[in-house]
Amino acid sequence: MTWLLSSPEESLAYILADSGFDVWVANNRGTRWSSRHVSLDSSSRRYWDWSWDDLVVNDMPSMVDYICSHTAQKPHFLGHSMGTLVALAAFSEGRTVDKLKSAALLTPVAYLSHMTTPLGILLAKAFVGEAGGGEPLQGTVPPSWNQLLRPPHRLHRLTVQYLEQFAHADFVIGTCAKDYVYKDVVSFFNRFN
Image (tube, rainbow, N blue to C red; front, side, top):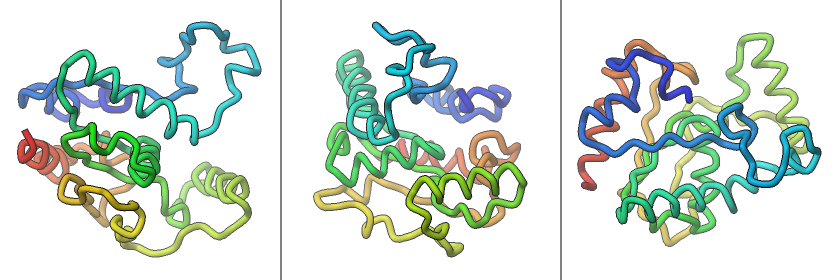
């Protein structure tokens, strides 16, 4: 729901809708907006027995299929943070990539070494420990996505924008994101309509 935190003039969901796009906002498992499972209660251990791999293998393809079945069109995909990470993992395995017009992927969870807040550092250390104790990824420039995505992929339908002055949440709730990011996202999506 972070896409809806800013005012309508500064929220990418509203900006896309005002630009004529059909906007569907999805939530990953574990949020308060995704707590209505068809057979499990959120107090059940089985309800929480999933990993982010399940988001890649099951949830993202289901969301895309749901949208396609209701609109009879391929949607554009816009991911931020974990949404970008899930999309990259799905695309690397050939899932959903041919069901999308294009994808704009903002701030994948990859550069944990740049965390500066105590909570961010704690979460980065917990993530690295969960991932096998390796070091956080280093560097200031995103990796080459064509090295991460296995063929066949359509790199011309994927855009990566790196803004050194932007922090992770700035892409969603930054007051100048409309000028530095959103106009480019709208323009990119329009190329594939």
